[in-house]
Amino acid sequence: MINLYAAWIGILGGCIAGAVQGLFFHKDDWLDGYSSWRRRLTRLGHISFFGIGFINFAFAVSLRLLDLEGELVLSSRLLIVALITMPLLCYLSAFKKPLRNLFFIPAGSVIIAILLFLWRIIEQ
Image (cartoon, rainbow, N blue to C red):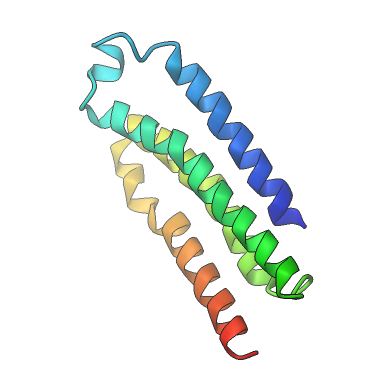
């Protein structure tokens, strides 16, 4: 059930981030221009709230449909880690480029969570 809450929090985060960024998108030089590193990373941060939020949503619904609620605790936690760290790293990396080297944390969390989920449903 926590992933369902996380999903909706992620979707809300995406809406808020989009609304804030939307206040400035019309400015050509905002965050050093449209194709700049900073602007690309903030756009990625905005969309990652939605993307990983939807993955959490799909996970929560799948657990319910497959009668696996209460199982796959590690997958659940990893997806929440990804939902927190991906947007955070996107926004932080926009201003501190070396932090991009930490993207293995959210990416790895999602990959491992999905692999564990698939392994569990295949073994059923």
